[in-house]
Each structure stands twice: as structure tokens, then as C-alpha cells.
Picture 1 (cartoon, rainbow, N blue to C red):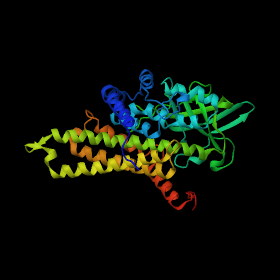
Picture 2 (cartoon, rainbow, N blue to C red):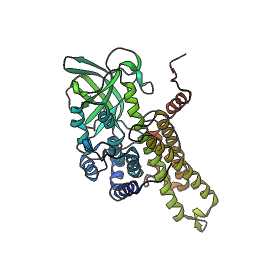
Picture 3 (spheres, one colour):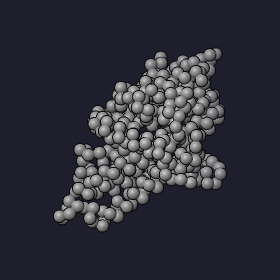
Picture 4 (spheres, helix red, strand yellow):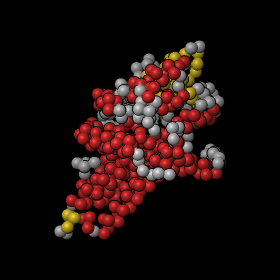
Length: 387
């Protein structure tokens, strides 16, 4: 058991940190002000730099590295802002991995290399008005007629909605209740019958577009099927990696806040000396550091245990749950130490705090992760619908 990063991992981490800190702060501020996503030309630059599809097979245009390498890069980008990191997140731990793992070769070749080059962005559409935490209640339907798949229904809370070029849509292939009929299809923006609702205005996640998706008898080819009905378990296995990405995005709000506040308390003077000299400040810094390091270890353990595959639901849920919780705590403590400067929109701390709360909702709320953890502990799933 070795907790040290390899030389190659450190080099990749430093490259990502240097690029993010030198090239992205101004863009992050712009996205926060305008609520617009990373422009396609910058996403293409990410691809040129090798920051997209880090853990995707080289056969599909990725770097062919491991999940841990991908998470290292996501954290460095997300320390600047969640918005500038979102294309990296989607290419490494998001829906693209489901396409790579499960889709027909024709769809893989059509989509994955274009994501890795930064030509397109792909988002995932899971939740519905009546299916959030109870995801198996989803009602969006796909029916097969000859050599055509016809998709109907609507999705809610799609991060990337209206902006992404393609969507991995969870849907029901028959009327079998629960998970047994659920699979997923790939839908391209601009397909007839596919439209979007207005952009959501959220507390945080500015620069990460979100909207409803509407499917009015959208016709798709058969190779648009990523996973057929009955493949819900496989989709959720792939989603375990996305949990680690979500955890890392939350962690980055905390680790970025800690870096900011360590610098601040050494410069800020009160009562004639830097406030780092006060023991109360030292205690807070230590508490924040403990939380950040513990969260990072849980995330990296999940990635390392998965090796070349995907993390277990227990490892990923532990990592996500803890990272989501400490992100809220650490950004709150950092804001308190910075006082008015932390609360001001002139500095990134208040944005970090708003985004930290969002990651504890997105991708499976904190309490849902706790039910996953309990289920893994006793070796069975719980029926939340039981009276």
C-alpha cells in the first residue's frame, strides 16, 4: 500500500495546476458573471492539451491512463471553478464512459473520439419531475419499431442541458416496473422532436447550464442504444465512477478554499499582527486540513481499488458522502476566517460555498449515499417504498 503519487502522476497534476491557474481564472469569473458554459474553442484547447478523456482508451482518442489520473486533473481545474472543470468531468467520469464501456462500436467511434478532442460535449439525462432519488420511477420511454428507436418523455435537472452536443438518456424500454426495463440511449442535439426548456437559475453552478429536456417521438437508429432494457445495474456501475468525480468536484471547493484562506490569514493583520498568529485561527486551519485530506484519501482509495475498472458502490458512496459534507463545512469555515472578504462576490470564496452545497445534491444526494453505504454493509438493498 503506497499513498504516494508516482512521478508521472505528479507531473500530470502539476501540468493541470499550472494550466488551470494561469489560463482559467479570468474565464471562471466570466462564466460566473454570465452563467454561460466554457466556450467550444476552449473545450477544444482542453482536448489539444490532453485534459479530456484522460482515462479513456487510446483506441478512442483518450490518454489511456487510470481513473486516479483523471481525478487529479479534475481537482486542479475545479479549484479554479466547477464551471471550468465541467468539460473535463464529463469527458472522464461522466456519460462518455458509459458509451465507451457498453455502446455498440459504431456509436463509440462516432462519439468518444470527438469528446476527447474537444469537438463535442456529452451530458447525462437521468432525473425526471417524478424520478429523482427514486430513479427507477422514471417514465421516459423508448420503443423499438423495426430498425428505429422512438423516444418520448422529458428529463429535468440535466447539467449541460441546452449546451451539450449529445445526451445519454436513461429511459424505460418496456412497461416492466422498477429497474428491469431501464436502459439508455444516445440523442444528438438537433434531432427532430428533441427540444429544451429554459435555462435554470440555480444558487450555484453558474457556468454549468441546466435545463429540462423534451422528447416528442424522437426517432433514433438502433445503434443509439447504449444499454438495452434490463441494463440498469450496468448503468449504475458506470455511475459509481461519476460519484467519484462528483466527490472530487466537491473536494476541490474545499481544497481550493483551504489554499485561499491559508494565504489570506498570513497576509491579513489585526491587532498589529497577522491573524495566523492567533491560536483560534490555527485550530480552524488544522480542522480544515484534516477534512480535506481525509476526503481526498477516500476518493483516491475508491479509484485505486477499481484499478482499470470502475469503483464499487461502497467505495464511491463513502467518498462522495464524506467529500460532499466536508466541502460545505470547509468552505463555511474559510468564509468565516475571511470575514467580509469571504462574503464578497469580489473573491471566489462565496462561489465555492454555493457550489459546495450543489455537489451534495447532484449525482445522488448525501442521504442517498448513506442508504447505499448501509445496504453495502449488510449485503442487501432496502425497499424505500415499504410502509
